[in-house]
Length: 434
Ligand code: GTR
Image 1 (cartoon, rainbow, N blue to C red):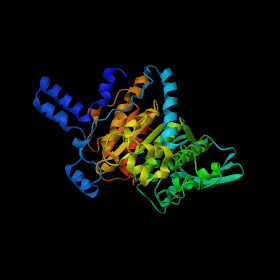
Image 2: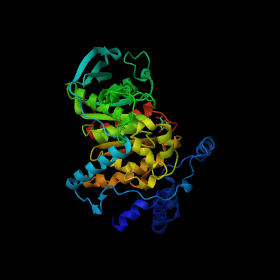
Image 3: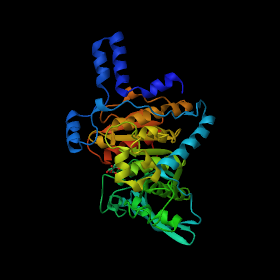
Image 4: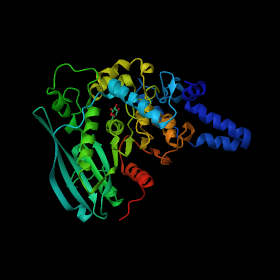
């Protein structure tokens, strides 16, 4: 790796801000320097104090983040990739590393795969939307698996429409197709009013979120059993949820009312981790959106702040390939870090979101993944996100095909977040017409 590049990757984000401040002091005077320093997000000291008190075993002090060196997404075996063509090969290697070491290897599309329309109601939401409930039937070696996709399409638009697909990790009532229950977690009316389709699948239908039962869905379909030893790179629950997203995409490709070239995969927290993996594995997703995805999602693993690899692999071993836990106490030996997961989305659009009080997910670490994925996006002439660009709360930042915001409040997926996702999609695809 060239020296200047290593230096860039090693330098700490606060140093970058300091650097900016020093430059500004030299050229423009102290007041601007102070302003430059003040603009970006900083955790509220009270939140830091309270969080640290609640979880004394974890680091919440920015000053105590030890220096770390990230692997360079563009460099492999001493060779640095400089073109999009060469990136295709490097991308395959990185994808392989994530399969082997982190999320496990997913099977592809099952044969046969069949879609059944369980409900088709053109007068849903008081006539504002068409509701479709689709059962996705998979078969493998005489075994069968079924899950449902709930899809609302805006009646105000004709022709194929772009769709947001949520991997729902919360109770199924959050995505109630009858709309008797409504939830800010999946504000379907709001998204329909913006001219987009909105869909959801229930993660637990693909893999129950339980370390003893996670094989009882799509994994059993392929492996034929829910017990006994497995390969160390066998797929975990996150990959099974992402696999479900790809099967929903298989359906979208058959529905003339859906523009399958404009599907955004969305997830919150553990669902956000899975959404990123779905976006990495399946290049048909045009936008990937990870809300407060934290450790194992957008947050850099080597940055010791909030949740750690050791904690996540012991609390949720079923989310990952078994091999991932080998890095619990030696995260610096991982051949990848999460900025490289984000880089796998390139050149497609990518939105990362954090919440001000959700320090467990490490907002700055989530933003820095975007920063360090920049050299890969640059292969398409995309402008960089720089560490000094971290915006303050509630001030979304959009740089070319990438976006980021840190919202006021706690760990959750909210109507505010959805409105920003729709803004971002408007910017990428143009505002939906009628
Ligand atoms: C936490 C977990 C996080 C995040 C979160 C969630 O307990 O440590 O990584 O996934 O759950 O999904 O809400």
